[in-house]
Length: 323
Image (tube, rainbow, N blue to C red; front, side, top):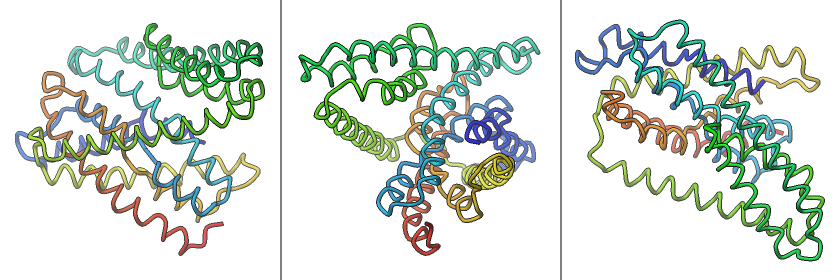
């Protein structure tokens, strides 16, 4: 279901089509109408869902395990797929719309599969290598956490060297390590790894939002309230459509069906955060002339979802009495 949702919201790029259609209607202004590929580039990054706040609330109030896993599964692979798609659309923008042929589109989707699949395979291989190495570290448990973090980082570097998805590589390396490495290392090493990873994740999230605050008062903005409102509305509407449609398909095959309450929480948990913010800052005006407008719209979307949805998700979960 999670893979279907990402495919629906990003590959088909319905939010991008909607934003482009609004621009063609002339509501953004004569000089503030992005082209089709520009809009697709923006929509590929703004579709990156970052439900960190939602997962924190879920963990605090101990919601149903199935709902937690579904939302966590989306956040696990969502960022990696977003980065790959963003790079693909960035290449399309550099080629320019009038020069794009069917061959370019075919190569783009083929590269998406190769980059995502290659990163996944590299991560799994390094996970197995780590599992093999840690079978012989019983005599030096103090080195085990170092092996785990070093091997995980090497999987990321290896994927980047071969121009594969580094995020997918390190994600699947971690999944493989969970199954094979955790049983090889001592309990104290396992606790150290979990605590260190949790601390690093919190520090990284804190730094991202610190930079977000710094860039908010920077001079890289171009305010277009109509574009910002259309972006927020399109993201919310297509989040609802994507969840309803794909959960309806998934429920035909699931043993435990997702009810309307769980679907509503999934819709409401579509927060935007660090990945969208980081990607939009990499856009230059040479590639996308409306880069400054995209930066402002992304910051507005992040603030809206974090402050409005992120703050209210906890009371809402308690009010609706989610299991």
